[in-house]
Amino acid sequence: MKKIDDILKGKVLFVGIGNEMRGDDGIGPFFVKKGRRLLDDYQFLNVKETPENYFDKMLEKDIDTLIFVDAVDFNSSPGTIKLFGKDQIVNSSISTHNSSLKMSINFLKQFKANLRIFLIGIQPENCQLNNNLSFNVKSSIDRLLDKL
Image (cartoon, rainbow, N blue to C red; front, side):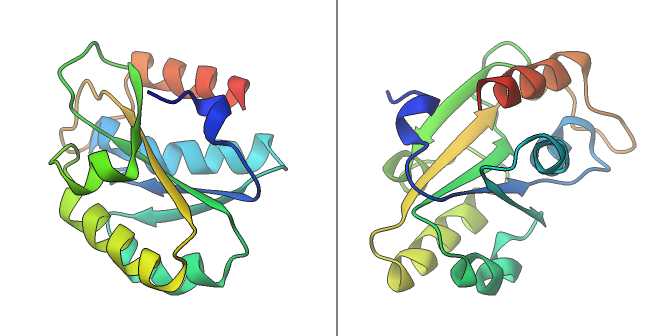
């Protein structure tokens, strides 16, 4: 399994996926908002729940690496961070937005064959409507941003 330092090669775009109204499902958008404020070396894009609606924005960017950030239930402790490669995303159901992720990867690869694609998944604690991000998830995002 690769580590985050191993994949930060070339020009990097972080793409946040999720619904901010559903507690920890808002991991991706929260990461993007905070990352934009703290990090100048990377590009950030919030695609909410529908990455497919932002293909044009993703394709117009001059990037080498695209990293989706999303809430992923992989049966771990809330706030646990796991890195997934492109093949793991395409060949499994790891995210509530997985069909969008699979379609996005296949579409993007048609136009940018050499684009390196990954997913940073963070184990959610609570994805119920009208909740804020949990403490564990916020802490994990802060630690992740500190590493970048």
